[in-house]
Amino acid sequence: MNKSQLRKQLRARRAALLPAQRRTASTRLVRNALRSGLLLRHQRIGVYLPHRSEIDILPLINRMLTLQRRCYLPMLPFGRGKNLWFNALDATRHWVTNRFGIPENATFRAIRARQLDLLFVPLIGFDDAGYRIGMGGGFYDASLAHLRRRHAWRKPYLVGVAFECQHIAGKLPHDAWDVPLDAVLTEQGLHRFKRA
Image: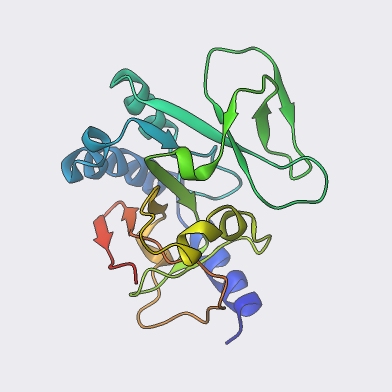
């Protein structure tokens, strides 16, 4: 099965979850993040706003803010590039919608991915080796390319966020530019992987 077929299958799995299952999963996600210690060890944390049928991480973001962590939302690059900026999440009332229909903070106080301590990454599917299937735009892989080129560079710690039903046993097809995750946080717990 190719990536396009897998995306379709995994999106259908995710979309089939009932509202009660989604709420329970979101609550358990916060609990599992706290139990893992992820939120205690990191100060600058990249997050994202859930889109379509993605797991709701807003309660997790709220918890991080109560723990006084600095949260940063991805911003699409200007022009045609793929290297994301991460803009500080604050109490701004100035939001714009990007070309994918996702809200972004209009105030530009942004940093690059390598300046984050921890980055929560959206995904459609993940495997036992920490590879993910994203939406297909390549924005996160482009933004994290420094992790492929410089093996001594360890920041940010990469954590995918998903429902457990998005886990694929075995290996997903992946390309040379795909950056594996350090872990995936689900309603079942934290799956940890070793980055090569």
